[in-house]
Length: 315
Ligand code: SAH
Ligand code: AVI
Image (cartoon, rainbow, N blue to C red; front, side, top):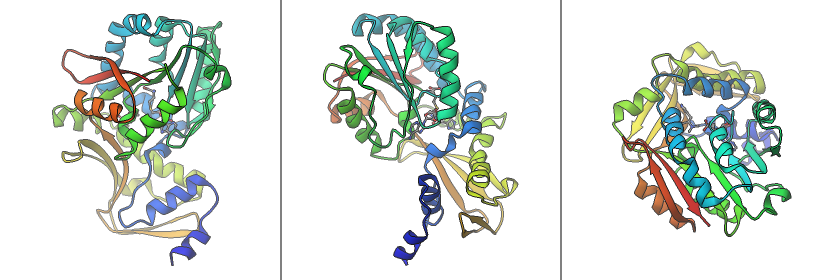
């Protein structure tokens, strides 16, 4: 049975991932597939909503600490940013650390290209070498970056929270090997807080997060020839106390069957597709994970409410 399914699997990693997730007992999809062109833009729209506090809290911390960061790391080296997206907050880092080379890395190539065009216009002397890659896998950074004496990795947005359980530590260990001895890694993480604040941030009153989540079905229809009725599913955000994470789900509003990449998938009314985890850390759980991955924690900056943490790791 298992062998037959494997044989029927298409070659495209996106189709493979989606089919294996939707045929699992508990249906799930990796959150990395949320970021097609529309999804990347919807994420930017989320950051502008009143309820989604992480981006503006993080930016406020950046405004207080980027000078200190430059004093520690020095200027004129290379910056490699994981999951760079629109590279908006990156400007605060670029202006302080004044890199000679910036390497944005993202799975959403077209969206990153637009961000790179805007950055090139704003910083005409900055060399930019974008890398389209999936950072859940090993990635290779350009030689020009690896040759620089000062190498700084940057992982903003609390995207570290989106790794599956246990995978965030593995990622930190991989980045340690990729950036190499003497490098720094600035990792930003959303912190545990009041559950109503968290739930509102992931189910904003403008419905932008719901649109971001439901866009996954639109992407399946467009790219995998699926026939999802987006109006027959709804968005749900749940706080999982035991695992310290907000989960996003798409919930089927009725019994229904959907066709995707040559397979029929049945949904019972109320059945969930688990589409994202957003783990919330404490300074202690982040430190423990970073040290377990071979890093030393050099500095930690937070905001006055301790809602968000910026961790400077040293290899
Ligand atoms: N850094 C920006 C964007 C965060 S949104 C900010 O702080 O606002 C998360 C970003 O990570 C998106 O741009 C998305 O395309 C990218 N991303 C998500 N999963 C990824 C993966 N597995 N590999 C590479 N990029 C990924
Ligand atoms: C990119 N990432 C850190 C966001 C988060 O908060 O987990 C993605 C997101 N999901 C829903 N809203 C925002």
